[in-house]
Image 1: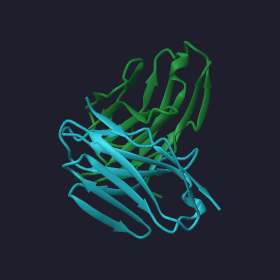
Image 2: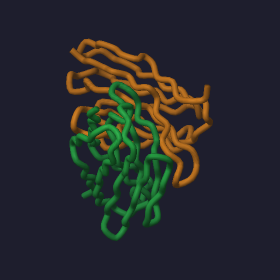
Image 3: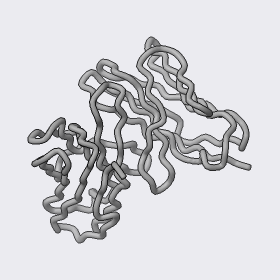
Length: 113
Length: 109
C-alpha cells in the first residue's frame, strides 16, 4: 500500500540522548516535510526538502537536523534531546501541483524525560 | 505576520449541520486546505480551494472568499464518526502551509 511509514511509533528518551526519527515514502514525491504537533498550537514546520539533495529550515528548526540522500527517505535527528522536544512528530510528503495535498505518516510520539 | 484563526471547539448534534470558520492572513495566497484529524491519528485531506466559491464533496463542502481572507467547512448530516479536529491551512506565496490550531468538533447523539 502506497504511503508514508514512520518509525518508531513512540519513544521515551532521556534528555541529552541522540535520536533519529525515520520516515520513508513510496509515492515518489519530491517534497517532504517534518512537523511537530503540540496541544493548542497547530502543526509547526521543523524542516523540509523540496527534492533529494536539498533541505530547508522551517518555523522551529533549532535542535533538529535532517538529510535527504534519496527521494524516499527523510530522517529527522535530535542531536541532544531536551524536554521541550516532547511532542508528536509527523512526516509528510507532497506531489506536484498547487492543489496537491500533504500525505502524512502516522506520527511518532516522543517523550523526553 | 502570517496567521490563521479558527474556533478551538464546537459542539453539534448527530444529523445536524455545522459550519467551521477559518480566517487567514498570509504573504501571498496559493490556496486553502482543510484536513480532518481523529484523536491519535494523522491528518487526512478533505478539500482544497483556490478560487472564490463553494466546493461540494458529498456531505462536506468548503467555501472560500479571497477578498475577505475567509473560508468555512460545512458538514451536513453529521455522524458520530465526524467527531474529530478540523485543521485549516493556507498556502503562502512560497507554497508553504500556514496551519491553524484546529477546531475540535464534538458530536452529541
